Length: 581
Image (cartoon, rainbow, N blue to C red; front, top):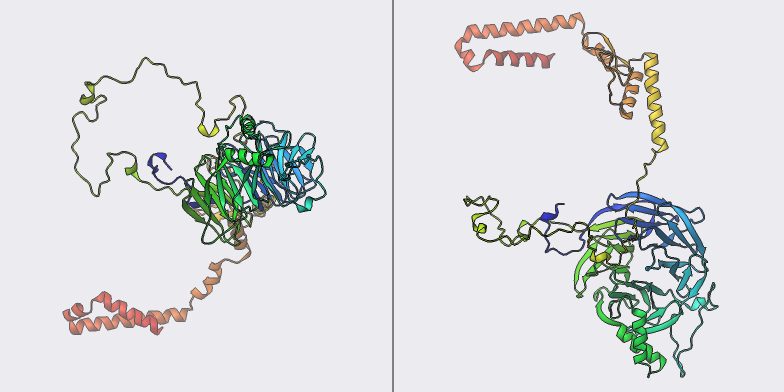
């Protein structure tokens, strides 16, 4: 739609289902940084990449060793690599352009979520959240894993540090519940939400817990995610409340800021010190919940600009998406088909939400734009009916008389910079020296074998009809000459070559049936042919009708013509005789 007639005062959030994508049974989705490509993990272990602008499949990544459902999918910062986690406990790193598998690592637990390090263009580390194990840092080059702490034990002498484990989980892995974790914007810290209702800021390089933020209610944290700009942190707890925290730390020097805060609160014991530092790091900003239905939330996240918060209903049999503004107001509830929602994502740039249903379909929710011309100029007026308008004398002059008196405000001698590229606020952390992968070259797909076989069969039928000289290939022309329509698709009356349309399958089938069945004209010839006796009877009847009309004319003269015109009498008598016959 033309951007010039879009009302800028309308809410910048999706409203209706624009279309849906279908390929196998998709389970999870993720956009690249620019939102030009959409990756979806499927139930058969493959990963399909959609060109989101054309809505066509750009590439399919498939590993012969993996046939289990994909549990999560993650793009690298500049889109050259994709990390997928599968239900067979594997992590697979793909090169997107070449479709080659870079590495495959098998863990001891099924990873529910895996995220690449956001600070590197070619990341070698990822954060994995297993099903029944603590979150871990995985070295994609060596395969080594480092478990992260999920709690701080308070004792009389302070917390007892737990040394990080490598390559295997501890014996008590079954006591862990699925724990949510995520990197901050630049990947200097890992924020972990544990089963005690706490948020831990962890320096993953040495495994130290740098801050603790208690959550009111102490419910299990199911999801934790940062906004795109790193200013806000979202948590989804088991108490059916989505909480937004404001990040008070500087984005690029978070570790140094934590060191300064720790020194200021060094007089307290260790656990109190961590909580005091945590209160300076994150402050509660908003809480979102459905106070009436008390639904659990699925895959909550921020919009691309961080102005909106979206969460899907976890109830079975309904596909509902709730949208709040950052001030805490519920602005929209999107209701989809009667299918459960299992994943969703907000487009990084546009007001578009993509959701995944339990049946494996991907629904694209977009804004329902309405034209409102009066929203663009303060002096624009909508007319109920046509009005006569008298234009000014200088209305269409290049320089109106009213402006000739004023001097030009534009400095015509000033040089205009057309080389410098201004950074987009949404991609302010982009490194211009790094080439970002935004689009994939399209590869032509071959025809389905079934269609090729049908084409071969139809061409063979056409050749057979030409060779056998069947009625399919020869028809009488307007001058009585036989015309051969199927002899060649590229011939002209003057012997020149020209392209003619190839007959479709339906036409060929009808022509074949026409050859097999006898023509209808021969069947209908017998009923139409009458005996000589019948024809004589018809002629006698017509003579009687004409005789009666002549007699009426002689007896009644003009009155007969006035009441019963000759045409009416003849038609009526003929119809009567036809019915009698």
